[in-house]
Length: 555
Image (cartoon, rainbow, N blue to C red; front, side):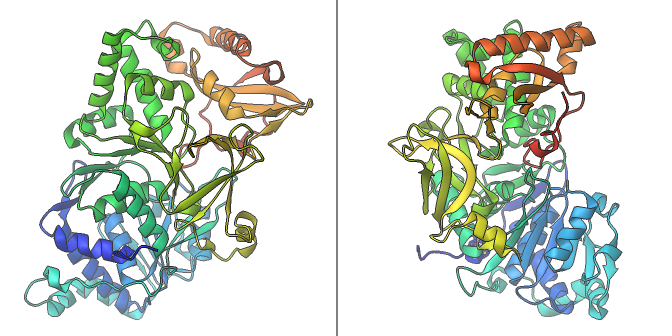
């Protein structure tokens, strides 16, 4: 185990070293410098002490990305309490359940989320505080309300001659396995499990980012992934803060228009994104600017004119700010044709493969070393294997172990035993292969694999990737119904209507897509039927489709 700064040391040292630098900005809003963050942390600690919150107690945090979300997180972990980030997209009953299951004593919540919550459904909470202005809305502790009202006065009494870097001394971890975060998975199975991440897991993930990404103090990072999910929490927030970067929170849905506007101003150094955002920008905002006639067909052309290729790369770089080292794409499968196109034009992207249970990184490589359709090699301090007699040619389950691994699922030993075997290997549930150099290629989820009547294994993600690049297809799912493969398609209605198509025309276009697609598929994976879906598929916060909701879809 490396003997370097601990997780809390990273936070403490970054605040001290970058005291007068900009730290957190709500886009089009106010900015906190590192010294401002330190002062707010100190006031939070005063309130926690008054409420009787002890190191190891749980504090829940639920709201949209913002500077105040980041402050609340940092204040909790530097106090020695356990932070429980909750995705603000969760329904109110799920939030209630997570707060209760985690045994949280305090809840910090965004005002929009709070409107739909019921404090009576969370009886163990000592108090509830709004994130937008840090106002106390529920108090069940005698000293809590007074502490909130007097926190500025108490702060002044404690630091009468100004608050300075030498006052920074946060509670250190008692052990590398000390619990720091309980992150409830969004998942695609309809329920949440509390992933327990230790200080050493977070340290290892931050350290890996430092090894791979050239971020310097003062560099800009945009936080557009949900901070309630560990990918955004580590890559956008914790790594950036510990590096002395200036973090910008979009505080709104990262649409292509918002990204183009904000990135041009912020010019981030590194970018983390889910595939859906990149795919939309490339397919709808980059290619049509160069040659609208080609459209999606350009993605499938074997050769592109050098001039066109250079123009495509230039425009793609510009839309993301034209100052970034690479875009890290993760959280869901990346469209194979879009990836091939980006690789061909020399666009600096990389694929990060991981799980909440690994906080999150399992595999990744620098963009210039990344093999096409691979998610890279095992991360530092991680071992990765394929559970297959021939890992290079026969897909098997991806298993891993190492410093990033979770402690287990909170209050769920049975689920922990199901995913981590007696030898310490975590079974990801993903199927993949690995070449002789250790590059991992993910085929799909084992639970998504479809077994036909002839005994053939079908990986639906591979078929969906092809289908999603066909005319007027926005997104799709391949399901097995009565031993026949059926394509559920949500059409790109805006594009279709813009080209004068009526409802019946769209149906015919989808059928034509099915026929064309089948020409490229082996006989055992032919699509027999198309069903049009008229609303976007339900998704998790990572923008993965909740497949379980559509497995019984009627044809």
